[in-house]
Length: 96
Image (cartoon, rainbow, N blue to C red; front, side, top):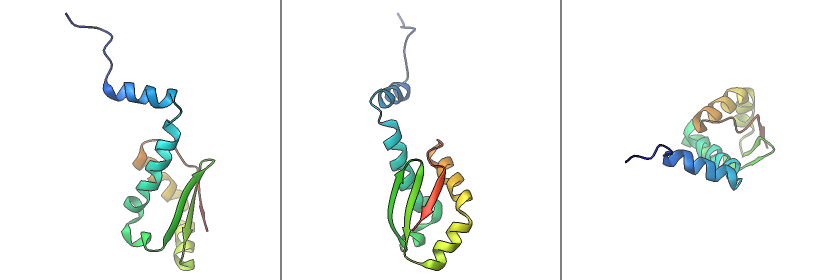
């Protein structure tokens, strides 16, 4: 006999994360992990701290030239990061 109320493991985990309010921190961590994948490992040589607060990704960049280049393309970077994670996690990037 087969049960009709069977849920996938993925759905159960997502429900659990929502109940425990862990979904947002998980996606924020995924955004930070996606940074080197989206921008490349060479950029990581100039990247310092990454943090997410109030839907903004804060990134410390040690090169002023690179900071300017990234600032110009920040909207595309936001879109790429959100697409990589599969959810709209950040609205803006702040370069320091």
